[in-house]
Length: 187
Image: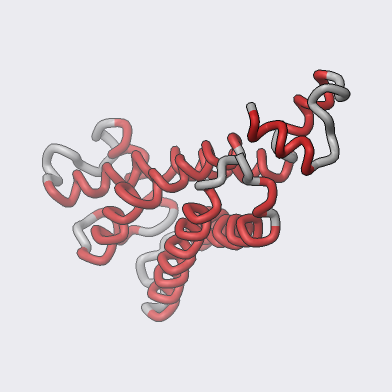
């Protein structure tokens, strides 16, 4: 309660004099922060389960198959392979390493960043910078690696490049928010 009063005093709003709707509005994150948090949560949902499935596929391809008659995630991967990048149909140590990173580090970071952004928590600033840096490194490595190989495994350029735009925009947006709008995260 004391922290809220300090934040309200910093914003020029008195807890006693301000009506309830004004206080609630000052505690609500701006629309751009809500949009960034929503993107964080969407990336966690897109990245986590699918990359975990690829890890399981790499460990045991017979149980966790990729194909039209596999389980749900196997069918999702199969649809992606047909329309995007067919290198995922077999084990690849580089893809496996990226899947481990995505499933066990970046997906939880996306989830926590989304929660921290919505709560406007102080701890989201260092986590957001860490997440943005790790994703930027990973996506640049991924893109440069694919471009240098001549995109031989890409079956449809549109379905290959379109999803990557989210992973390029997100770390830039997140890093800029954590640096230039850091004062929003004081709770």
